[in-house]
Image (cartoon, rainbow, N blue to C red; front, top):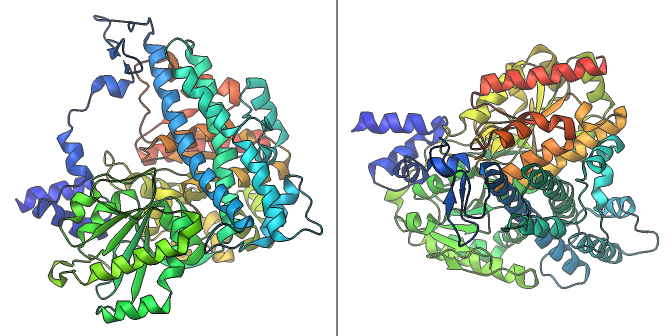
Length: 627
């Protein structure tokens, strides 16, 4: 029995620090995502190929991949259209989720400007004025609140059709914008593109697979250079632009003798006020009265990334650590907002004393305690939740607590501004290092955790391989957390890098991998690429740069990969989207797009081979630039 459990654990995770907790779940029959994946085998082959369609009541339909059965759905759609329609639907869902996150940040930002939010203020007023000036708003003689109102009104208009333009697309180099215009994929409005996508996937509308997928790129761009970028920039103004900061990561950040509150999800609006509430002396006194030494906040998933890079709050892990965190028996309350949250969490929490606290009207979870969050009463709600966690701590059984490891140190907070500051206020040292070949190029490694891949294996091994090749990684989301848990996000990790990258990192005392934030902060990668391309007077596609998503699972990650490719990044994903039922769609994405946006997708599950592909691409771009 122990041999079988050890075999399963080794197959499921690359992270040695979480293996003890994973063994516990197997020994005590605590169900996790890995068990549910196992129970789903074999998964639907039609779904994996993308050739099943449930779009209308004439169906559901499916195409026989072996040509012995039906080759068209009831409406007449062939495999190419069905695959493209499904893919567009997924890209659109991802764009909608990140952009709706951006809308909530914008609404809170605008409410704060109008004095209608509780517990918020503009922490980076320098960036407030900088963004205002960038988008053509006069700042002279205006208060911060007046400037913010104007910014809010201008960005609110970008979610519809009033402007027919996204201001932040001007950050892209002119050569890149010309590519979008020629391809007909320049985004016009965030909601405009999402709504049109959903119109196109309706039966009887989109019928040309290539036309459908080009609009998918336009919708993705409306997120990357629109909704997500708005979320990132306004979050910086509200909560502070990240600066380089030290913290810790893994399940060892949970503490036996403290009230443990895990903040899980993606939106920083709630978590920011929970941090404030947890510092309230009355609540700290109440925690001590309950027998705890204090209140311990830890992040999880992208809410954790947001908190770490701005507040230095430790992180328990990435997406697949959410159930394992509960399985330590040390979590008193897990506060969730939305995205990447397993509906199964309350079931697992019931194995212990833990409470799951849902906070979004969009993401109510059966079995969770619901404390609906609104900006107007943010601090009051945060206080209620912290009080609930303290009361729950009293129910904790110390005999059930098993924290498996000590925390790992890591460095985060590499916003575009922080990177420029570290370089002395200019990108010239980075450009010089690239021209000299000390840094061959840059890869943005992003995306999720997926139980189909040994947990963290793809992220960590791709990172190690690229470091050896003198390629600088900028990471977000679960990719960044995986590298942090593996000890790669500290300056000392530079000893694992190639000679050139190691020299640069040691001279600046920085890690060989830069943590740029949460998954919406992939927009920071776009901004950085835009600034470097503008400095060199080239398009983004001409940079020695690329993208990667080794363990992706979510529609959001597919959208990110799509706006990376549409922006000019050759992008390698570790798992294929569900497209192999159409040779035409597959060929368009992995070859044909090169002639449209000067970039394309590739699929490679082996991180070593993926690193070679990325290096070859970067070296070809260096050759084209003559460096």
